[in-house]
Length: 81
Image (spheres, rainbow, N blue to C red):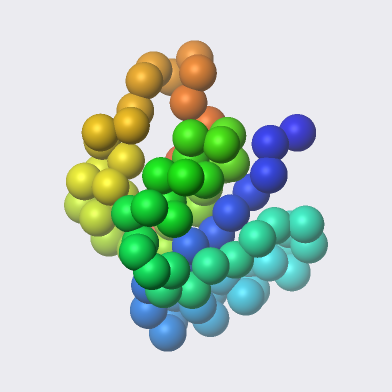
């Protein structure tokens, strides 16, 4: 199964990620990764399922250039804390 990565950018997002991690003990959490775009794109292209705790616009601008199609790309869930 593909790994799950939660990525948060704010303190409230980090708090939500910690709560979600209790339901997904094998998931990875990145808090304010630098550089953000590289961290997100690397994991996406490696097949990680992503839970992005940020504004939808940030997620769209970050992943837009690397999207292929719904049959090949891993799942992405965007939650605004």
